[in-house]
Picture 1 (cartoon, rainbow, N blue to C red):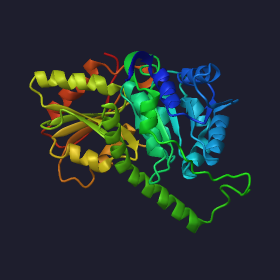
Picture 2: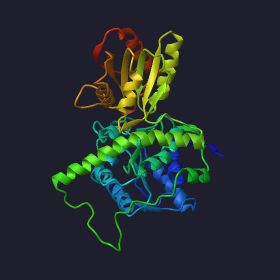
Picture 3: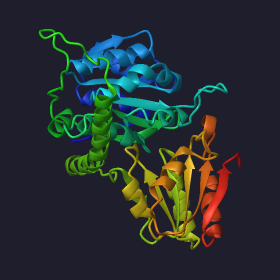
Picture 4: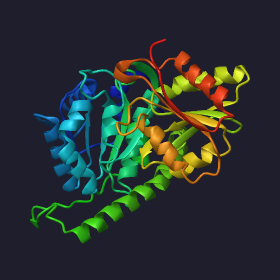
Length: 391
C-alpha cells in the first residue's frame, strides 16, 4: 500500500532517492535544491537510510565523489541547481562520457547574470548536450516516480547513461502537493538491486580515462549516441512497467493531452504544463480545438514521437522557460522545428518565451498563446518570438 503524504518537490526527490537504496550520496547545498540533500542527510543520520553520506566542499567535489562511487560499482545520487551545476561541469561531462549510471536531481533556476536565484530552466537547458539523459517533471508525484524510473533507465545495459530529473525551482521544489509514496518492498520488487558496472578495482590497479586518440574517440561518441537512441525505447518500456507496478503512467518520452482532434497545439516543458492543460480545457469550452504536447524528455529528444503527434495539426507554439542564445527563440522551439524538418505538413508556428527569473506563466498567458495560434492557423510560416510579459 502506498502512503499518502503532503510533500514538497524537494522532499519527493529525497524520498524517491532513498527508496532506491543508494550506496553513496554526495551533499552540497544550493538554493533551491538544498532541502533535497538535507532530507537525505536526516534519513542517513537518523538511521532510516543505510548509505554513505559524503559532505563535500563544492559541487565540483560532489560530482567527483559520486563519479568515483559509480566507477567502483555503487548506486549513487546527488542534486544541484544553477551555479552549482556550472561549477561541477567538468566531472559532470565526464560522468556521462564514461557511461557511468546515476540519477541526479536538478531544481532548475536561472543562471547568473543578471543576479537571480529564482525559477527558470536555463541551467538544465544549458547542459543538454553534455551527454546526460534529461527529463522534466510537471508534478511532485512525477518527481518521486521519475527518480525511481531514472535508476531503471540509467542501469539498463542498453543505456548506461546518467539521468537528470529536472523540476522547476520554488514552483515545484518548495510547494506542497498530495503524493503517493510507495512502500519500500514495492520499489524493491520493481527496481532490481544494482550489480554495478565497476571500472575500478583495488586488486587490479588501472588508469581510468587515459588520453584517447581520435579514431577511438569517434567510436566512443558513436556508441554513446547509439545508446541515447536506444534509451528512447527503454524510457517507454520503463513507463509501462511502472504503470503495471504502481498504476501511474506518464506516457514515456512525451505526454499528449486532448491531441486526437486538435488543430492548434501548445508544446510545454515542466511545471507549466498543468496551467497549459487548464488553458486547453477553457479553449475547448470556447470551441477552439486546442491540444497540449508535453516534452517530458529533452535528451534524447523524442523527434519521431513529436513529429507524429504534430502531424496534421494546423499551428503550434513551443513555450520555453529559457532562451536559446544562438536564436531569438527558446531552445525547445529549435529542437521541435528540427524534428519536423522532413514533415510534409505546412504549419503555422512560433516560439514563446516566458517565466524567466521566477516570473509566472499564468493561465492568461497560456490562453493568449492559444488565441494567437487560432488566429494564425491558416497562415503557414514562422512568426517572431512571443514574449510573455506581466499581465
